[in-house]
Length: 75
Image (cartoon, rainbow, N blue to C red; front, side):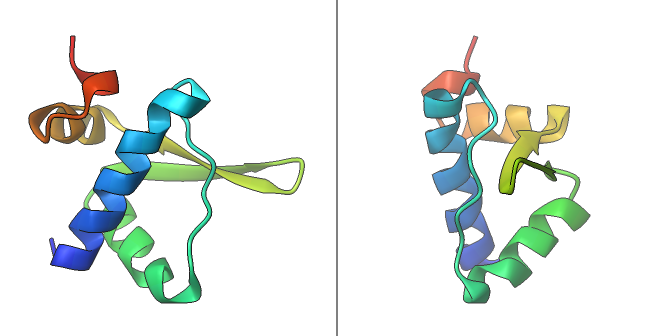
């Protein structure tokens, strides 16, 4: 995982607690490739509702977030 992809993942994971675990996706055009990387790594999926994009964390994504110390994903 590149440093920029890791940074995006951590930002999304840290924001998850503000959105009941599924943060609003608000990224720049430059970050789209990093989001694609996260999807290819099997860490996140995305979905759209009422014109907004949202992020779901897979089990692997939740585990990685917990390992990174993201409080929302720690037991």
